[in-house]
Amino acid sequence: MTWLWVGLGSALGGVGRYGLSALAARWIGDTFPYGTLLVNVLGSFLIGIFAALVAPEGRLLVPTAARQFVMIGLCGGFTTFSSFSLETLRMLHDGEWARAALNASLMLVTCFAAVWAGYALGTYWSES
Image (cartoon, rainbow, N blue to C red; front, side):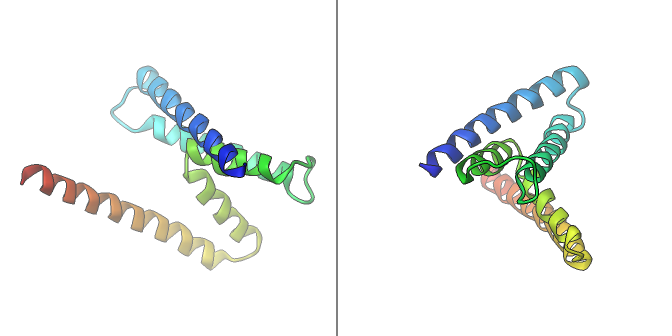
């Protein structure tokens, strides 16, 4: 049953990302990925709020399935950046400054390298 809830949350998050990104492009323009920036920041903000509220010392007691629906499904479908941000924040809260810096650096460098490599490969295949 958890798979169904995570899947539903992912679908809703993905549709929300699409809609908000399109709206931002229409209102602000598409010369810079403002829509992506907006959903990444908003998703990080929302997962932070929810994580704090449902933490052991938080204000809300929610079932595991509900946490997974929101955090993995909804926020994950909306933006995977929210998960990365929360994980890095947890490292910082635990005093693992070097690990948090490494995580952030590796995420930026490796994801950028991967998109570059994928784009290069796709371009090569398109031109062949």
